[in-house]
Length: 191
Image 1 (cartoon, one colour):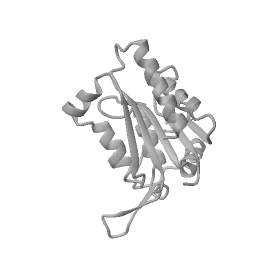
Image 2: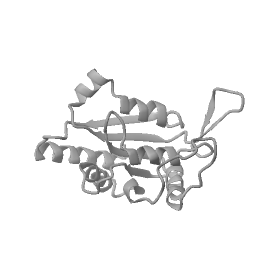
Image 3: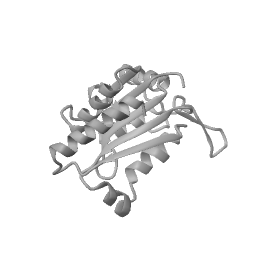
């Protein structure tokens, strides 16, 4: 793998627990080559206006993000699970950045595609307001499956680990600090 670690913070609130988790991972990885994208700080239209029928021009911030993604060997996504999915701003980021020609290419006359981001690994660090066991057993982890199988693996990122943290709502300071330490350790190990 060619590059370092890229953290992508998908929470729209800079004072969120996800922002604290992103910073904890960054602190832990302090001796490694590491970059961070805070989606909330980017200037871009999250709406893929024409779908894939017609190309929407990428804004400079998204071109920079594509370069960081291309050069990373390990990508850490940090986001809350909202309505069984990712926040709207993160979904818009995925739609606009992971476009054909960059992340994948559909083959002419075929149902198959080429995966352009192969050889990378990823970690999904996601928070939720329900117990993680409940999300797994009752709902079947729809956001985990969407991000791991239908997004990361679709573009070639096969090795994807998931760190689910919950419930955040009504959690204690001890619980939150414990998870910040665990995520800091993940950063120190580069996983």
